[in-house]
Image (cartoon, rainbow, N blue to C red; front, side, top):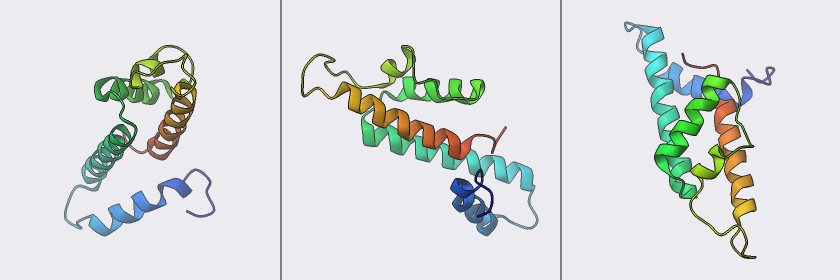
Length: 116
């Protein structure tokens, strides 16, 4: 896994699943459920940490998985962010947007292609 750039950020997920899997279960179903649970938990952590709008964030992420990429432009990302003034010097809208996009991009890259 260390030799593959696409698997490096997924290593802990794979190792945690291997440790939790039962030999008598349906591996494919257990994998799908494991990834779904971890994905939901990590997305909730991002939403809580950044104070994002939950429904809009989930819709934004689902669209990214459907389309195959995080879209940094357009109005969808602004619906995810909490209300802030775009014009005040200390509003921090641009910095917040950049930070949230980076977190969501890392989240997307971590889980993209792991579950159906």
